Image 1 (spheres, rainbow, N blue to C red):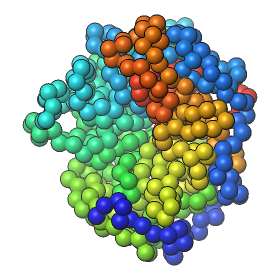
Image 2 (spheres, rainbow, N blue to C red):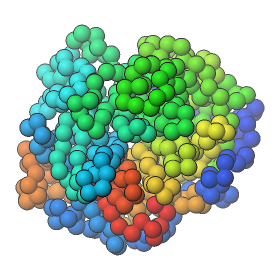
Image 3 (cartoon, rainbow, N blue to C red):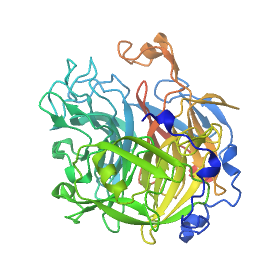
Amino acid sequence: MTEASISIGRRGLLKGAGGVAATAMLAAPLSMLFAQNARAAETIGTSPYGPLFPTRDLETGLNLLQLPRGFSYRSMSWRGDMMTNGQPVHPGHDGMGCVAIGSGRSQRLVLIRNHELRAVEGYGLLDAPGAYDTNVRGGSSVPNSGGNSNIVLSRGRYLETQPSLGGTVRNCAGGTTPWGTWLSCEETLDVNSNGGIKHGYVFEVGTDPNQTTGNPIIEMGRFPHEAVAVDPVTGFVYETEDVRNRSGLYRFEPTDASGRQGSLEQGGKLYMAKVVGVDGKLLLTPSLGDAYTLEWVEVEEPDADGAEVTISEGEISYTDFASGPFVQGYLKGGLVMSRGEGAWTGPDGIIYFVDTSAGFSGDRPGRGEGAVWAYDPRSERIECIYASESKLAGNNPDNITVSPRGGILLCEDGGGVEDEFGFGERLLGLLPNGQAYPFAKNNIQLTTADIAGAGKSTMLIGEGDYRRQEWAGACFDPTGRILFVNNQTPGITFAISGPWQRGTL
């Protein structure tokens, strides 16, 4: 059954009978983010940092971003720049985490960055110490080009880019661990026909590339992963799934809870979230303030192949192919999101999840502009703290990060918005009333002369207007002074700094 057959009016879907009351509040830290006015997310909010202006990159002199007054940035590790092994930096810059190593004047920052690629001519295998599937992909002339690279900085300045994980597919997002590694997630269910090697796993990547094994953590599940967030108290890993209207929310409970690199590879048990008292609850169209209590049902075969499943609630019913973990969890009553994407653990222990297409498009559920959920692992309560009602108010947020000060930042991935600052994708902050506001805009428009003048490869980066290309991988350094973020295409990493104390971030 195609997605086009999923259709139901708003009245039949918003508040299904038997649902847990949506007005209950979560723990105190979330109350500041709960807006009584459900119209708040129909319009964009006013930024506490002020209006945006084209701002010159301190490295190239190009006006690549729009930022508020007082903020500056440097670009680094562009697509096509040389890595330490002599390979060009791969494109597809996506999810990313920042880890500090050492202390004092010798401290360095390592950005562990995903590359969301399949097999790409001109790049081929990312030649990294940790390699998973080195076979040439069926139907292609090159191996998988996805994986990870590590950007090393000293005192906030760029030093080098090192390859760290290769032979993987569509490394979309992931998450940092409390013990200082990155969990890189494949957003796929591919099987490489050369050798029958399966994909759709999570891999652990270290700050030292030589400590990255390239071993999939199979018991974390095989499905189109997006992101993960680790609860520092329990060591449980929460995982999102990006498949439209067949998206589960998962929890991995590791056997080895020591919290060290390699501990997750020892295995554990996978669970899928379920709304207490409601089997198969559809969370495709949340409203601001909707709240539920969760429990968890076990996924007994995390590596199972996908299958068709019929999903239904009230007047909605559709049948489609879903991942093996989703099918098992849903048949036990697991909840359904539209497209689970970003995940991040805040400094107060609250875990935030993004559903990038939650809401309606006309009468079609799960085709909206996106929402953010906040989950308290202690109380098992989850609440919708942001739900966009228009592209202007938020255009399909994808990745999410939380600053050390507790400020929430979203990366748009909806193809660009025209607003008072012109056209482009935005980085959005969240206000206490549930509105988003524009913190930055993609302003990347390149000519061949711009590319050559910046010392970049005109062979690998084409001239053009890249303002509609997505933001990804936002993360702060541990002090909160620098925001790192990626432009996926053409592929640039930015380091932004400025007077964060003026606003919510």
